[in-house]
Length: 322
Ligand code: ATP
Ligand code: FE
Image (tube, rainbow, N blue to C red; front, side, top):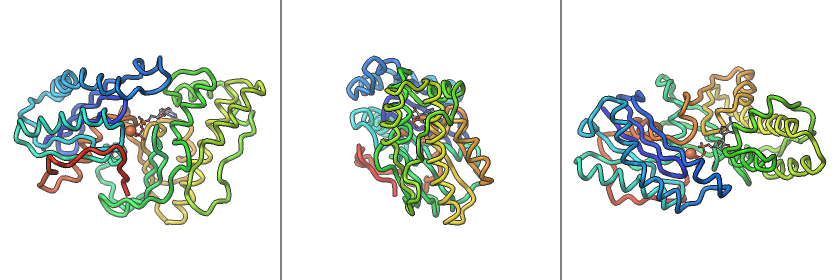
């Protein structure tokens, strides 16, 4: 079965192809440079850019997989959450293709896509397991009790982890996206130099909080701490915070498998910290941690039960997963 997956939820256009659960093409057009000059994503520009590149990306993905459009059996696209104008570009494009080719259509939850990205190379894994989604818009910890059943254990009370990396990077005069920039600069700094405290210590829930760290980082800049030391210390405390909540959830639930996905899953310090805990860890392969179309195709393939969604299923800017 050949599944086409499209994601235009934010500022990346993603078109991917999955054959029988294996990724055979994954093309992403990033709009980072376009939005960089404004210091954040401009929704209308994002939508416009999606419309301009989506046709070409589809052609590239088909060429990469060595298939024709007529070979596609199922067409899936991100339904939400995201910027509604941006979402609608890929979502209605996919519906149009489904209608023209007379193929079934599926609307996929964006976070479900991120989740299945971490399973791309682990088809053997079965629930239950824990899933941490740490991206630009989410820091959510789920217990996946069965395929398609997500119990929200905890979420961020303010900023998402990736958002915190981006904001602190901006404070330090680094580029966007901030995560990779901070990680690079942190390699030259002392992670203990700035005494940032781990947020929400002693809580009995599984919540995250990052906005206090952002303020603490601003104070550290004002006090004249070395930028590399701030980056290293900030990364250290974010990793400690994420790891302490997640590892406590693993102990409390007795679950030994942890899936980590979203852009922050690319962070090496986070990976190394979690690897020391002795859990079975699942991360997305290269190019699949941030937004892409293959993860949407994977999610659709996993959920496929012989019937697609109605073409009347609307896109949604706000769409809870659990
Ligand atoms: P969402 O899926 O919640 O709508 P998003 O799709 O925009 O958000 P992703 O593309 O999954 O988010 O991830 C982007 C985020 O990941 C950015 O905030 C970026 O700074 C962060 N990020 C990327 N690489 C790293 C890294 N190496 N270390 C830390 N953070 C990183
Ligand atoms: Fe995303």
